[in-house]
Image 1 (cartoon, helix red, strand yellow):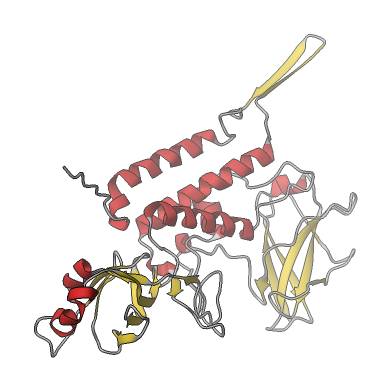
Image 2 (cartoon, rainbow, N blue to C red):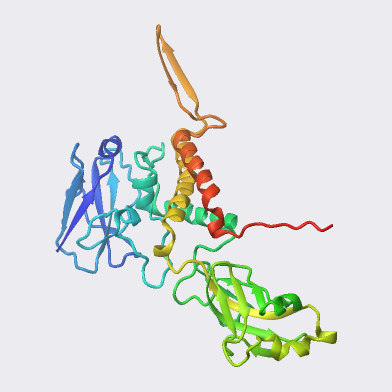
Length: 377
């Protein structure tokens, strides 16, 4: 037997549309759910009662549950809730509540749906104005957070989510859109050219992506594509990971660095640049979402909240600015902040925009390189 605890948030708004709660069960979290209540056992929603319990006499520890709101008169029904494990209850899960950690073999979520609901969007009902008052789902919050992370990565020119880059990967390798255990690589990278000036600077190579967690492969090729050295196997790699800088310099045996060994080869006709000299396979980003700096986590979540608020506001009052009604000398008017240039939640959006701008002023170059330019005369 399982006892299922059900929390009803915003109960007065729920009661405007629904009268009962249905309970659904599946043998797996992602499986097909079947209703285990009926007209006689569906849970009646009572004003001011926000917590309900349901006894599943046939339930086992392996079962998962979902719930939905239902109106027994109009037959209107809401979407199914998030999955609840046997004996569990819908729990607020996230960094805000100190109870989230990435699942094994996954990078994790920078900010969970509950973090968004109860921290960034506190006091805002994330529902639409349709007859079913559709709520924003966990998946929708996950998507806006993912989009916000991607846009911050592009602006800061650094990787936050974990990525694996490979040059010329074998066709047998598994590529994934997002990194997780079992994925061999997420992105392709191009070979790097040989530059005598950089080579004389301790074999310096600037990788295209950073921060770099590790370099798994580093091969040096000749102009005719013959392998000269496996730099990693020869223990010639020295990594400055924060901004993706690699120095190919022996850790022992050669007192004057790689040029003392291969320098003569590049004299004369070979003392020139040539393409496709170096191939690197490497891993970038932050180990898992647990290790993202709190300041960066917070500011990305605020940007995600802006994206969510713009959509939620339109869902409540799309394109609506003001309205007035007059009848027999009586009149009523209503005005909102919504307009062609102002979103419904404009005040919260502007506050977050100002905080993001201030954060960038003081923190951008902790993650992005300082731009420099030179003018020749």
